[in-house]
Image (cartoon, rainbow, N blue to C red; front, side, top):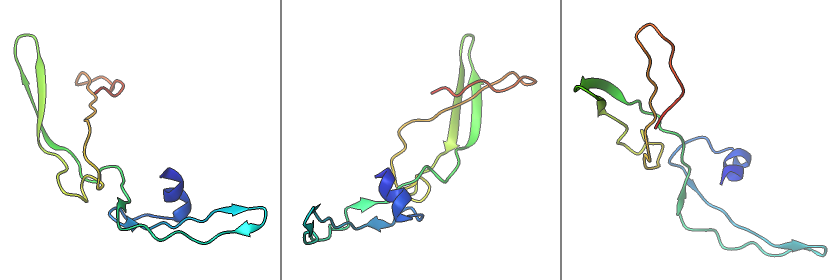
Length: 100
């Protein structure tokens, strides 16, 4: 799929991709296959941001929640959100590596 994205020049998430294939050997190419039905959609990383992060704490834990995350097809890049990553720091420190 990555090669089709790079070589095909696809750039608009949500675009259906149609493909046809042919076999070739030393004597030349055969006939093209029939074109697939609209079954594959070009997908990207999410384009909508997670917003409104709220921190709450108890004696031993800090919990981060957010009220808005990508929900539309365009916002999710036409793919399901599978997980979230976060970074944290002390207020005057630097951010550490990403965690999930």
